[in-house]
Length: 460
Image 1 (cartoon, helix red, strand yellow):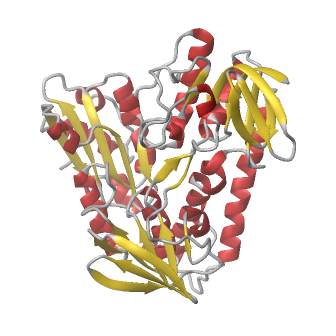
Image 2: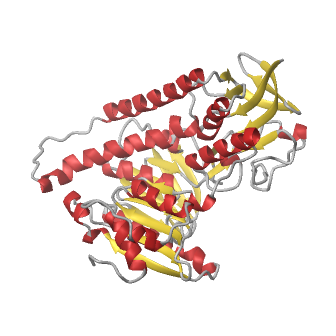
């Protein structure tokens, strides 16, 4: 039996970051991962490849349709889909190789196989090279998988998940996306830009559940103008392959016949088959591992982070938890402020959010003030020809502390970092308004929205 100080099960963003930080703090760390490539779903078949395709499809669309507005005349624009997919793969390979290098640099012992808990402080590696390991601390960081949908038969080809949608060999004539969340809208945008007809079916009466409803409504209008069709309040009851087509059945509506279906209705934690019951760890009704504020399960020596515990299923949230967890193990201190965890949808325009939504503040009867500023009135946005969207800041009525910031517009994913830092440090809207922002930049829209909280926006 091989002994370590810490065994991490899972090498996704939470697991590999936790392993590296623990090694930096002096622990002898082992990490068990069933995939040969490190980085988890995010790096291999999630965040990274999807962003590579989003960027590529956006540039293709720009060359074909909008560069002429800048005085750049381009003719004969053609899509080379194999080349686009090849570049995506190279980006992924570089990053997975980077994680492997970091493991080697930090002297982390990597085990290839499935990790299964077999007793207190004991984990077996199952696979082609079985091992028996022991450690004082065991961290569960096994991530999540695509949630199934009753009646929909996944075949890994015509009816698939985001994994298949990242590697279609040809542009679908008609792609049906089931689910109007982050992943569905991002990949729907990719194939819409590349020429597919895209229909998004959503069970709820809105897109982007959980995001600020004002911003979600504006996003729906923008995406509709881009050519994406939305059918809200649609309950999908079946999706079955018929030769080279797929028939999608919707309760109370006519069937839709298309050539590809992307199922994107959420994710479920990867907690089955881990042997957690052998040490008395009981899962909650959603299959998650219950933890305390320091990521400890209710069984001594076992911890959990990321998608297998409560909270949003976001890579950067898992990373923060991984660092906080191992720092608490070693130093006794470690904390994550969940009010300062941003979320980003990498569509065009991007959508970003941090803190409370206006819907939540109303439901909780929190007194607040609101300031908004449109990118249409921002000089840099006009220069970029990216005037859609706005910044919305919510601040406490009495203290002026920032409670939430919501952005739809160009580079919203980068702009939200200032808002996350502001919430982390307890800043007020006045603090942002009085902070000098370079001109001309998109960030000036944040400053103006902060001034608008007190009714003092300058340029609108």
